Figure 1 (cartoon, helix red, strand yellow):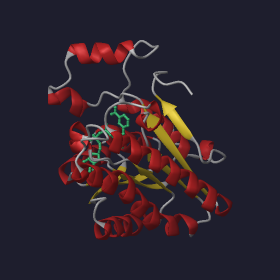
Figure 2 (cartoon, helix red, strand yellow):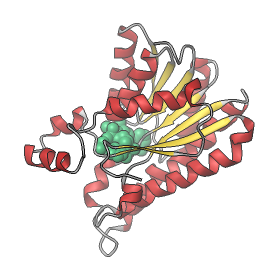
Figure 3 (cartoon, protein in one colour):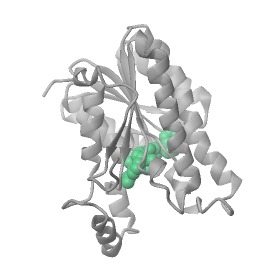
Figure 4 (tube, rainbow, N blue to C red):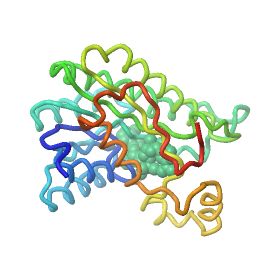
Length: 255
Ligand SMILES: NC(=O)c1ccc[n+]([C@@H]2O[C@H](COP(=O)([O-])OP(=O)(O)OC[C@H]3O[C@@H](n4cnc5c(N)ncnc54)[C@H](O)[C@@H]3O)[C@@H](O)[C@H]2O)c1
């Protein structure tokens, strides 16, 4: 399939999990991709795998909590790819999520870090990529949100707020820049089992069975399930889709 042939795309938060699967999917569909992550080792590995399979991918360091690196990573991507046609902004600091307890007790450091990376960093990225998309009068941005934005859960309030805010940013971008050829959409995954989660050893069979019991389906989600939706939204097939949140969750949360 060459639906994305020649498209120039940056994936942010691409060194593992869903972002890495998206890079592989985009490159497999013909896109030229920059692989941006704070985890430079992961970004290098993903880019190398793509190149070894005959695709084109370049690793870049980025820290969404540091505006300078965001601007530099986008500038590097534009230089390497000769412009930009799309961005998948997917990063989140999930190391702090276990301490994101509840409204009464969550530490403000955890809240600030979550908002800095998952929300403010996404604004910084949006601000950095937009001029390059607008220069073409065309472009697509896909954000990775989460079911947590809408689920109403008794835990991880900072994370849910960051993802809810991200959907608001997405709708703003869709609304403000749509008439200038830009689309913006969110993909909201449900529970997605990544290779990193599997290898962490934290996911017992009991936890996996519990997660499966909450899905009206036969299996848990995989990063490729999300990558397929992102690829569609970044392709010409998605050109008349703007301002939407797509729940990709096996039916775990129906809206
Ligand atoms: N896996 C799930 O069940 C699930 C469910 C809902 C939403 N999501 C969302 O999907 C996205 C990807 O998550 P994942 O499950 O693949 O986990 P992941 O940890 O593999 O991916 C997150 C990526 O973001 C990067 N990152 C973290 N902090 C960063 C920073 N400051 N600057 C730049 N990059 C940074 C990490 O290095 C990592 O590569 C996240 O936005 C997450 O909130 C995941």
